[in-house]
Structure formats: structure tokens, C-alpha cells
Length: 255
Image 1 (cartoon, rainbow, N blue to C red):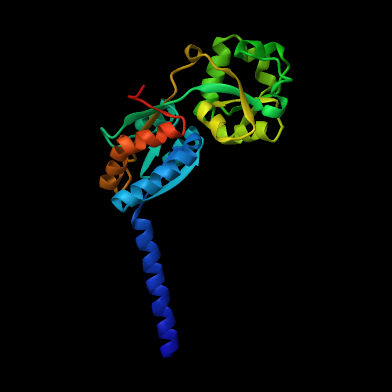
Image 2 (tube, one colour):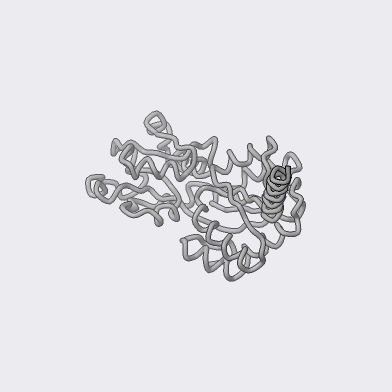
């Protein structure tokens, strides 16, 4: 009998400990393009403030939809304003918590092993090159929305639309070109930088699409608003800016 009671006590302590761990962390939904840099910043933040951060990366629009459906999230960093607007329309953002954190740009990339065979030096030449190109799904990820906007404004969308391959988010899209399933892909420059064996064929003209801005904010359902506020302030600090730049991102108020 004593053995049974001891076993039950151990289970109770373990369950309590697990619950404490969950209570001691904040959950941040982040754009897929931020995966590596946010994991690094999470470590810095935990070391500095003693608050654990768990990240849930993915396509920003898809993440916003999950939050709307009730997924537990304390904060978000999206790759565009539209997913944040979805939350704002439903009153799901803490008033005055939002900020514009980063900027980025789009590029057309191919595998280094095949780049010399692709005679494309500008995005405008893509329509005549007969390439199989991947972009993130415009309905799920801002990277795809920016890419579609650019192709439409450059008069290329109708010519290329039926041959495009859509990825769930920008990282899935990047995987398509890495594995040779497509000839090229339109991704963020920061994504192209973290993968070996890729070459930038062309930059997408910034004027052909809306500015790529990463907004951040706190979710109104969070029970850890104070800790989330600390994390958002940390993301605006010198250490975070330095880390963002190391990963190729440009702080919104930086050069």
C-alpha cells in the first residue's frame, strides 16, 4: 500500500512540475522565415530574463487563422500586416502592443549546380525562360502574397500562374528548389542566405510589391501580458537588433 501511495505521489509531483513548466513559458507564433533567428533570441531572452519562450513557426496567415480558432498563443511576429489585421478585426490584439520590427526583400533563387543553365538575370526575364517556379501559397503566407503582387504588377502573373508550384510557407517553398522539384523559387533573401548550395539569380524589384514588414504584438487572451511585454521590448533592444542583422534581417528603424 505504501508503495502505491509513493507512486501516486511521484505522479502528482511530476504532473505539477509539467504544469509549472508550461506556466513559466510564453508561446510566440512566428513567421517561418524567422525560425532560426527566433530560436537564438529565445535562448538569449531566457538567459537574460529567466522566462522561457516556445515558438510555433509557420505561414503567417495560417498562424493567424489558428489563433482565431483558439490556439494558445501569447504573442506573434508575422511576415506581413495582413495576418495581424485579421486578429485586430476580431479584437484579439492587446491595445498598443504592436510594433513594426523588421523588413526583408524577395529574391529568385536556384540551385548553384543548375544556376548557370538558367539564363535569367532579372525577374522580368522569367516569363520567357520556361522555368518551373515555386512561391509560397498567397492564401497562407505573406511571402506568396508579395510574390503574386510583384508578378501581377510586372505583367507576369497570367503567363506564369498555371505553372507555379505553391508551398505551405516560405520554408516549404525553399525546400522545393533545394530538392530539385522546381527550377527556381521566389523566397525571402534571408531564407536564401541560410541554405548552402543556392544562388540568387535576381532580386525582386522592391517597388513591384508592398513593403515587407514584420509586425509583432501580444494576443489579448494571454495570461502573461507582462512577460510578453518584456519579450517584445527585448526584440527592440540592441542585442536583438545585432542578432537580426547577423541573420540578414534589417531592423525596421535601422539602416
